[in-house]
Image (cartoon, rainbow, N blue to C red; front, top):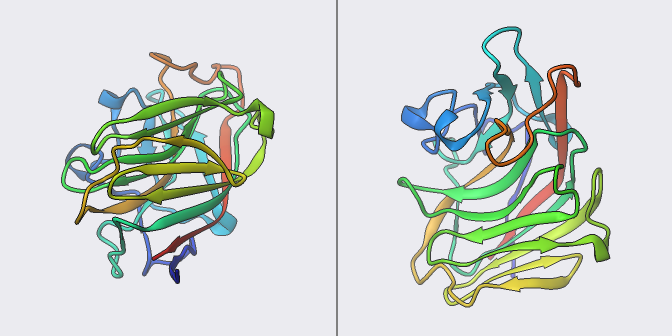
Amino acid sequence: MTVVFDADFTSTGQWTAGRSSAYPRMGPTNRSDHKLDYLSHDYCPDGVFSAVRRRTGGLWTCNLLTTEGSPDGFQVQTGDVVSAQVTLPVELGAWPAIWTWRDGGNEVDLFEYHPDNPDLLEISNHVRGGFRYWHGGGVGIGLGASFGLRVVLGAHSVDWYVEDELVYADLHGVGAGWHAYLIVNLSVADGTYHDRPAFDGPDRLSWVCDGLTVER
């Protein structure tokens, strides 16, 4: 396979910052998805994705980068392999994710994480079904942990690997001819399903995506 996408989180050619059709009307907030986000138009040097508490309104200014609407317009497709190096957040309320989106769906969650479940990765295929809440303490998943993630977007099975260990194969896949944009972001949970940040807690949350590639 050949690398067809090598992420530079400062590239205005690869990424659009602070705007996604996954947020209502391409707007800056997504409260219906239990997020306290107000999207920033900033890019993310060194792969550091941040959320900063806003002075009013209870929202957080959050980083979101997507290939949707970018000059390059890159999309992953059936058969691609997405690899990333991830360092997890430690602060309650932080909600990092790498995922795909197009035309109101086509969503595969390469991973989501919530520090109130420190050893748990959430991985799911919303295209054709399949998810797992994977407890990864055995390979060191926890607050502030760094690990390698690899996801094979197969037609008949989406397979997730953590540190080269197969942790879930959904046996459904994305089907032939599937394609979607990449999203990398940090949201803030509103407390409905996961703890929100404490009112007297830190004013900045962060996580790091230290490299992301797509092979085809």
